[in-house]
Image 1: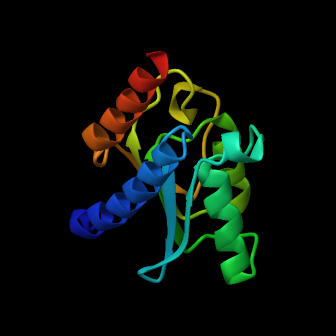
Image 2: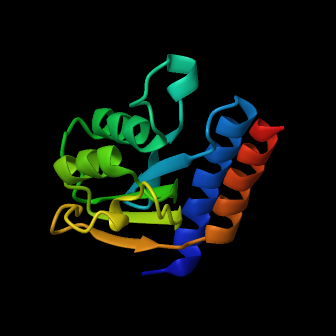
Image 3: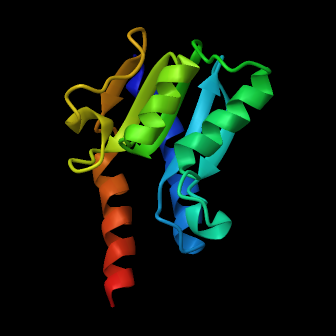
Length: 147
């Protein structure tokens, strides 16, 4: 695992989260990488599309599948600024994605807090990369919403 390269891709996911913030979406961003190349970029679109399933991960997986013409993504890595929820982890399971790297932990809704829930057995995952930056963007968004 090359943390320098991982950090580069997570910063790209953070750029997507910032776009979501500017569009008054919950600021979560994601990129999918294959062969050292970003093949999809996405952010939350739930408000714009009026669709509870339009999470950044779901958008990124769909775009990556289209880019590769495959529903399976075993040679891909998802970089996402927030730990995937149960719905997204289910989609990650079915896509058989090779690796997931997330920023901020989500103690309430993240897949890791559900003890019986897991990603695909072959999927590697790491949490906490650029966690402070990812968490601060989320905190800032929700502080502004409460005012």
